[in-house]
Image 1 (cartoon, rainbow, N blue to C red):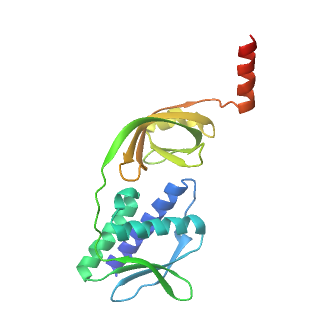
Image 2: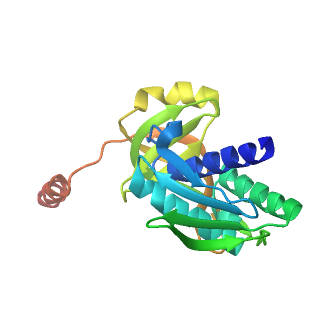
Length: 217
């Protein structure tokens, strides 16, 4: 039972990491999910989401598809570790992990016995992004920036950088660093920030006025 309990904790931690990647400002506690059915001969993970249902559902489906396809290079480390642990459990006890949702009974989305662990190559590129610094710090310091396109950039920084950039919280910033991209999906897998600076965005109407004044000068 201890082995199964540790496995389920890893699964919950992995799902949380995917939700946090979707929205790093979420305050997720332990009762956001309930496991309502575990059968004896196989590992049937039937989940009920109690909070953050939309982002939890999206993250769960992404987790399921990654596990069944073996393309775990696209998901956070905690999530890929959970998939590997489930795979090891399956091999040890000769069983299958079934993923689904609970609606008038168990509805299976996908299943797998052993993770294929498809390899994905990557490349790095120096990039510049613009957005608002929403959160900074942590035990392993990260700068969470909401970009102008609505997506999140979770940049790894040093402790000293966290102290230096703390005054930029809730301000518009420009961030320079090295992005690690997946060759397969072109998704940013990691971002190491080298510099973050505040900047003042200018409205389109103000920009037009500036150009007009320059033209008439």
